[in-house]
Amino acid sequence: MASTNSTHDPLQAVHDVHTQWLAAVARGDAEALRDLLDPDYQLWPAGQEPVAGPDTVIALMRRTLAAMEIRQSFASAGLVLGDDWAMDRGVETFTITPRDG
Image (cartoon, rainbow, N blue to C red; front, side):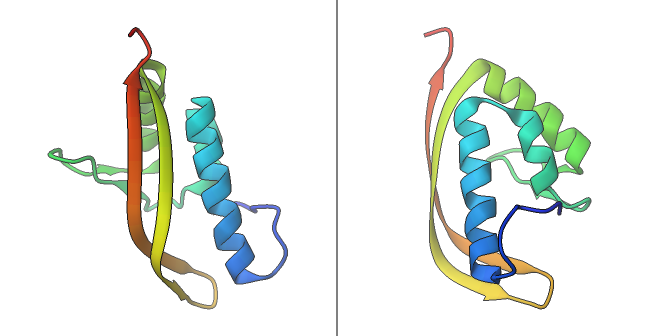
């Protein structure tokens, strides 16, 4: 994952990634998500096969964000920090509105 412009505080780094992700989705800017994805990133859309890899995920998000306005929030239920990784589990909430009405 690329730099998140945060301090060396791991909690702040996780917060910064969340903030950047939510802002990019709210702007409809799929390309801004690229720097937040690791090479092994997977997206698991409900009822569909997982989408793997940054290029494939960005292509899907580009199509989705062009067609839909998405407001997303995340409530953390448990954060685990490693030396150079983090896992945050929680509840995501989405409000999705078609751009064409």
